[in-house]
Image (tube, rainbow, N blue to C red; front, side, top):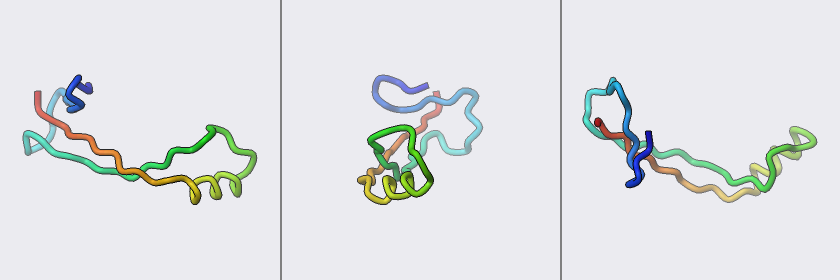
Length: 59
């Protein structure tokens, strides 16, 4: 569950540490459906890449 402070709470907590942060790269695409794999590949190559960060905490 994501809290209002953007921390993510996991129940039950299966991890050794009480808190950790995960970063992933993501692309924002202008549409959800593409006519071909080639069109999707081109859109992915042209889309700006941003880093999403989530911190998971023990409740």
